[in-house]
Amino acid sequence: MASPGSDDDDDLERAIQLSLQSAQQDAEKTKPEKRQQIINLDSDDETTVDETEKETPPPAARTAVSTGMLGLDRKAMEQERLARKRKASISPPPMRKFARPAQSTSTPSVVDAPKTAHRDSGPGQTDLAFPNGAIKKTWAFGYPRQGDDIKLEEVLQKNELSLAVLSSFQWDVDWLLRKLNTKSTQLVFVMQADTEDAKAQYRRETATMSNLRLCFPSMEGQINCMHSKLMLLSYPTHLRVAVPTANLVSYDWGETGIMENSVFLIDLPRLPSGQVMEEIEMTDFAKDLMYFLRAMGLDQSIIDSLHHFDFSATLDLAFVHTIGGAHVGEDEPWRRTGYCGLGRAISRLGLASGASVPDEQPLAIEYITSSVGSLTMDFLSVLYLAAQGDDGMKDYNWRNTTLSKRDKTYAAHQKQKTDAQEKIRKHIEEGFRIYYPSQDTEPERGDVDA
Image (cartoon, rainbow, N blue to C red; front, side, top):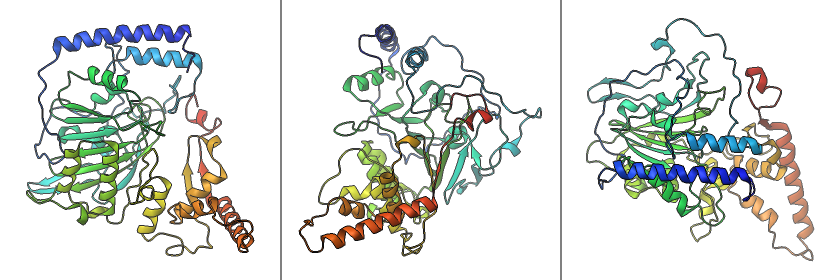
């Protein structure tokens, strides 16, 4: 970021202050009486909206004079400042040119829609779109639909959506709200806010939206980033859990570029009225999801409402998460998150090396990264150990041996450790594939800033 005394930062700060003053004044004039209400996922109210979804790409973003988090002016100024300073962004940079493939002149039809679209088979019966879970690509606008892709609108299904909990690192709120029925859908946005001032600012800018609540996960201690992407989508008949790799911005969902992300979705039916499932009876997937939501700081009423859905379809699945900060305690919370949690999940699913794959056979691992330069052999090694089902203890013991060099077994221990590490490095070289879009391949798909 630019130095505190730079002219660009001074100009930006003055513009933001003027923007916030205007937004706050407008909000005070139009602020409705705020109602206190409990938001949860088990509401069975059904909503319908007479709007037609279009398959064609959306028109270019309209110019606007709105300000604040829901506007475009401050965002544009920030993007211009970052461009001038040539600072790298975590998400792909804005596109300069984009040559789309030739599009068919025929009118899109229902054939173009994914075959897994939600269907109602009659009163009391529901044909869930993703009853056993599925992984879809985000559709890049202008390219043919292949049946393995999905649009954000198809994930959200706004006409039936009662409540949406959305978590993301980067946001384009104005763009997102156009994908939702903001009059009938209760919304919870889980966002990063480093300071109390930032939290207060976001609350001011959304004060006129009575059906929107904000959740700010802890940023204390060693936590410096809230990068989690998660969607909990509640409908009259089911709960949809979606885990995308895309941020909530148009570029990541293929609308203003050629970016392809992925999303895991599973639809979990609502239990009969009056029936709940105790946490001890729930699957490991459900327990780890609730554990993560508590760490996130989500309202307890939303977490409790998960007991009204049937998670039995997740019996052979695992919810693997990363919770920032230090994890200590008698219940060993470090085993439940990060790469330790990944190894624990693989072991619980019966996929650990020695159980499903011989320990001598290299694992085939495909790893997609946005930062090749940050990868080290030590990092890849702990990932490989986790893929074998190790919960982090093997690497920990290697790095923290209690043996003294004078100990008679020290030399044998060191040799055993070295041999094991060399074996892992050999397996990584043989079976670990790393994918990363290069400067050479990106221009082939369009003239973009790679």
